[in-house]
Length: 509
Image 1: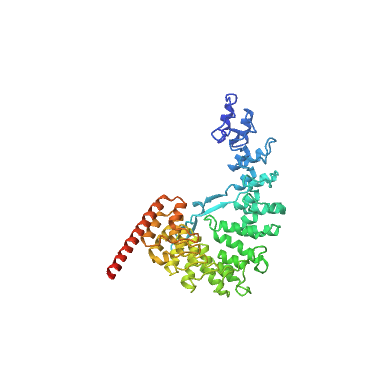
Image 2: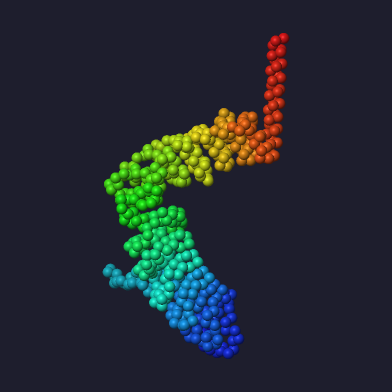
């Protein structure tokens, strides 16, 4: 009766209801659900408790705001018992909820149909409009609460202030109004994710809000901004073009394409890293040193996110043959980031040295084994004839790395491809593939290596055989297998020695 406004029924029940504050499954009393002023007064006159909250800590004001009931909002905030800034269990005030409520979307209807007269036969023709949706931007509840001095400073349990929420829920007019009301320290407040209003506005592509925030003294912390962008850039709910729009504006206003305190990064590096090809094209003729390096010695070209960005940088005059301070080429970096598009592009169209080794002796194939969790990039490189025999500065070949990083499918694949001489190849610690397979407790791998004829007596720098390592780690199954195989080989060797000795005696006699 309270929810649907049946005031006559409520009046009839006066004196007949024992517990007017009885709660529903959400802990809500009838008073909390009062649809209008008359219902509220009728329940109060029946003895309802005006300060009751539901199980979630919501007051009648919270519920009225949530339901968009402006009549009840206006009535409740006039009551002396109403605490306009009361926070529920999630730390939400009525103002927070008013900002978070989505705008209403409605369909166009047949009343919008228009008529015209056919010029040929004077018959009436009807133009049926395409079905459209319209968004009703109604901020009236927010305005009512603000007029009654609802706090614009309180944050909820996630640290979001009204300004954070307005930007998150893309309430542009509210956001702009709050920015004008707040002082600079409030504009720079962070929520519990460490996000400022400027960070949120940037990654949600709200250019006009970004402009006003900067004009109003919001601090431009590029490191945090980039962190937010990097986290959001792979979020399916975020439109990549929106990030591009606000970043383009930021690039335009920062002097000489440089960001302060960002490890020597320039806007050129960032445009390359995030794939902002439009920005790069706009800078044609304006950038003096397209091969400028960051603190890792990386040029923007080395960080190119995709082929369009790469080609835009080449068009600006970037050098194809640059390496970073660690000797990494663009291919090394693309593999490191798991950027399949750039890996393919570089090895197919850019005449790059697929087996180029960086200062640690790592090829792109080595990095594919040690840095990437899936096998796809390895097989892309393998298919393009990347060497499976080159060792890095620690003496590790692709087979060593595959076993070390537990890439089982690739390990078995390489074992079948490589000859015994490569399978017996030690790294700088004297470890062969067999030693590493034992250390990783890979019984089936040990079996195949032995079947392929690897040396069982090969020793590490610490003078350990594979069997010694198995014993040290108490790997019973491998111990039994290697013991048996060692005894078989010793028996074969003894038999062969006896046979050769007899042959020599026969020749002498």
